[in-house]
Length: 280
Image (cartoon, rainbow, N blue to C red; front, top):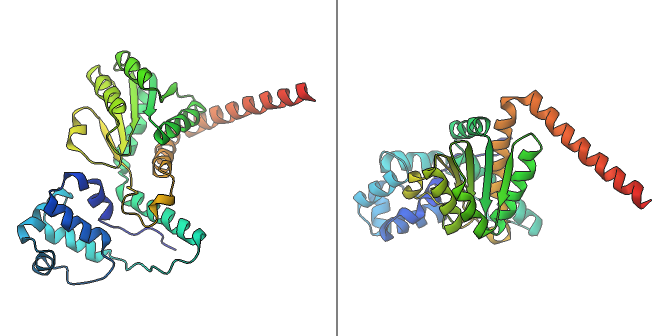
């Protein structure tokens, strides 16, 4: 069974904050629409009380050459969703599936491959985040540490600002901010970039200013317009993207990294065994 469906909606959501009020009105229609209607420029312009020129500008901000290309993609891949959810289990699983589908539409494999090469080409890696993103940063540290990456996670505001001073071309800094508004995370990325470090931001917001201090902006699916998105952990879309990065990185030298991973697991198991013997 094919689970993933090409959709323009994730790109609309990622660029939502860049839209004018008129464009947000257009975006809301395409995000929330569940019915197949006449999507021609004339029909939609009349329906939303906007000009056809506004539709064209909106489509271009979403990364398309014009409204015709945008709506072709929207119509071609439009899937009428069934709202017959029954029970909490189905509701949650459907929400997770929708998030995975959004990730499928946003992931840039060439970008992920570049990040994998960055990881191979630096001496130190830092990953920072606040709140739930900080927990995800810690998870990334533990996973990549097991395959030989010299990596530290940072959740503390003061540490982020202090570490910014020590970054240079030998460093790679990941910042995790779903909102794209965590000042301390952006500060570390900005300062690290000034000092020659490679910088990667994982975010659900596509803001042009990020290109000034980020070598890569990895777009994450937004929970904002997700059905029942309030029951989904905000860590989930980040963890999925980190799994993809991890997979690409491991694949670059799979045999050696699998040996490192197995050795670290063996060391942990031996430590656990010794602790059990002491208590017995």
